[in-house]
Image (cartoon, rainbow, N blue to C red; front, side, top):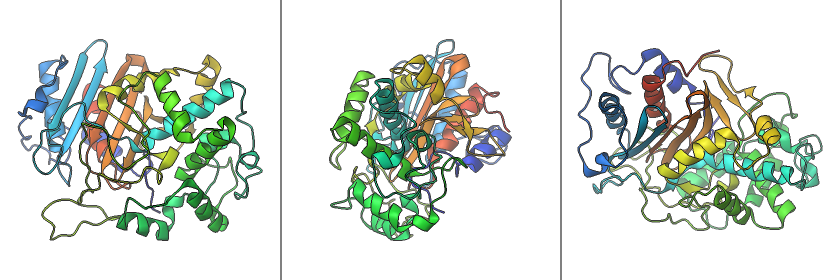
Length: 403
């Protein structure tokens, strides 16, 4: 079943492979082969590159090797209070050859869900809603809506049909990512049309973008404001000046263009095309509160620690947010909390949407953060996962325990 803006469930094979190979030759390189040369463009010499020179060079090799399959550029950000920092851009921001820069804006895809969860949890802290409220109190006529609680939705345990699995919707979206006139209420119609595919809540943790679109509608009902407006206040309160919830298809300057990965099965690229398909412009109303937010790697480095430490929430709510349930049962340990993902020992989230893939993560025991962005994805593949896994396996080899 297709998953759009998924976090990790379908990317586990990539991570498991990274853990077993150790990335001794970098992603995509056969064992024993020589790595490609490190980036030499001006963008690859950005400030604050204080990580050990040998380690930085090995990260450069991993990042350069990731520039394949339609990915023209990547940005890597690392913050470690002991080892130092590393912020570098690799490749180009477009097929015309514009050098990638560390501060480009990009779509953070499913990392948006962490902000939506932050909004709902903050409203709970303020007593404006309860996590045990039934969904039906806010959104009517959803299958099992009387049984589904807001806590279920936050934890991906609502059993709600994932609207991106609807073939008619996906065909339309692939044909035109701008989808004029789309709104979250179109998602409701898809959910209701697939009532027979809904599951009772609380039985399993199953990733569903629909559950976070529903939470956005809950935020609107409680606050009397649009979800975009309220999440903007959440972003501002966290002090993230280059993070925004757009209302148009445009990205803030500077930005990297986004492409469909050339091996995409979801949105195949014409084999005769000389360049990957450009999908930079897309309608933010389609992913909505499941994936619309835009940011930069420097902002996400700061946010990674905020997310993992519960910034802006009461200590009790921050603790509840990290009560994990398994997303997988084999391979690297992957669990979901309340709008936050645990991969091995890392806390954060990843995402994939047309044109962009990223990983935002924090390792609490080391107070270290690693953020990766690449500028090609199709909402199905998560190319950033491979690069991220290579970096953390290199720097923190014991941080990806398996079940």
